[in-house]
Length: 167
Length: 276
Image (cartoon, rainbow over all chains, first blue to last red; front, side):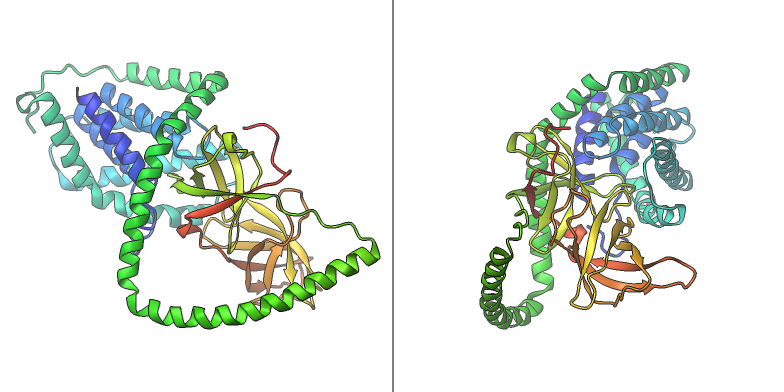
């Protein structure tokens, strides 16, 4: 049941992410909604569920992207796995830790994606420009992380039951 | 209390490796999954796209009410001017046609049929500047077909699924087009490359050619992907170094790639015969 709820949330997030470009005119860029949901899901549910969420979220991103099919699936699966390693210790609502995790997940995911595409022979923007392209997304992700965390926590509580997850 | 037993991390790790192996070694089923997925999401994407487009247009209109009045006046005068220009160009076209026949010149290949398409999504990766449109191989869209708006060149089709297609924008670093300066004093040719920051870079223009900011850049028709005469943009800053063989210049694209909505695919012969 929680996995089905996550699937619905990921579908919605992926659709929104594919249209959210330019909606925040001052900052530019767009938030990585799917990445945020997968990170929060992993932090709250552990490595197994984190990986599942990452693989599904990555698959959805691959449908909406021109990058080689499967690259987002594998990378986001790894993000979900790593986020799941911090289950319990990270999920107690420490705001600084939460924001740092969002920043780290953004840089790690896009950095790994950059390296993977480069290894596959793609022409990519230089490191400086890549940093400039990534900065707005990272900022938006950090700002939205507390909201995503609360959203996923609420989703789990509703679908699993309040008594099984005391946070 | 959380009663769930944590799973050992090596098991999900193994799952990721298994998925990676499947994706790597079974491209055909993976392509089918991708095609099915895009077909499944295409109507939803179109609906969400329409809703977002409507919202953005509404807010944009509210912000620009006073501006729109002035623009309306400007456009009216511009229509009058363009109508007279059109008549003059028509005359020139007729004259040109007569001269071509006279000289027995081979007519330049006409651009193919235009297929109207709508943008359903933009790429979710900041590393790639591409969009998805709502027509695919079923409507005759093929890989490498040019995509345009009435303002100019947008990019080319890089992947055609049954009902959708992915278009790589001209501003992506993986895009390039053979171009020509549209100026009576300079017919210099060069290569326009995407820079991923919304602008284009004009390269391989010999030093002796005269490049000036504001000059119009159009496709040259060389290279076989884009037909000649499509507007690309205008020259911006020019960089000339004595020690280099070629000069470079920035091109400001004529099309705002962040506000794409209604586009056209040129169903020309340049596209590959089979869907990707």
